[in-house]
Length: 72
Image (tube, rainbow, N blue to C red; front, side):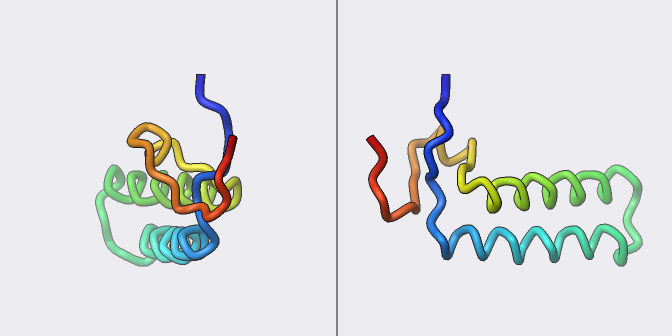
């Protein structure tokens, strides 16, 4: 089972938050089909969640960490 150790650095978290906000805005502004808009919205929500929590499941799966503090 995965633990929830932080694996996102501050710069990565800020970038994710900005990108997530852009995706969520594009969801409502861009004239997209429903499934494409739903995909953008879900991606934006996931990115907001990972930036708030500081942990990315994708990074955990491939063993990447941008967090400067080493976890035990």
